[in-house]
Image (cartoon, rainbow, N blue to C red; front, side, top):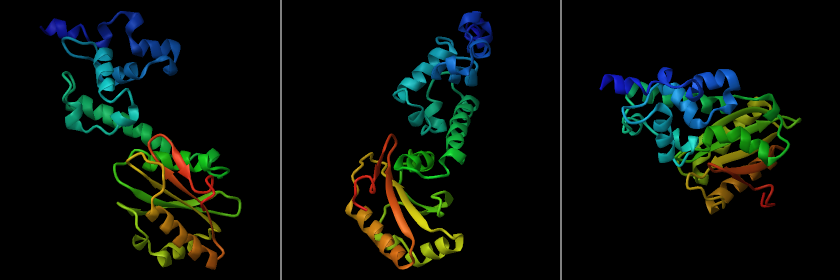
Length: 232
């Protein structure tokens, strides 16, 4: 039985089927998601190669890396051939990918459209299972100088201390704000609470000559912009 299991190790595959060699000779972009995951786990089980096993794992997450990234150790270890070490490798790799997306990029520092805000915020809140409300501070050149989460959980106007919010804004020397929060349910329509909190911050900003440029609702795949819809 040991030799049967060993035959599914990547190093024992034919050269054309080895994802490591394929990466070396054809480049990383030539590999499928399953092949990349197969490199991480190294081997499959007695019935499946690493690639076949990874295809099964991806299929369970509707072939979505975003959904797979939400899996915990226990869920990954339910697959035959995935022990704790392999599950940790998969989780670590997906987390690195998420952090790479979240890392500040110069091309997104300057806000020119609601799409820029979405691309900045999606790595932070796009796949959360709870709501988070963020503030982005901008200077006169519409460059993001600072961003931070204001609250976690459900959003209501009573959860926002506008005095502390604008104290931070003034300390950072920001001249404009963009609000952003996520809807884990996937719905794009703003709730009454979303509208109320926007109006509250907007009115407070007017007194200090600090503009609220937009409020973005982020979901896993897309976004809604208050400014684009002319309701700000």
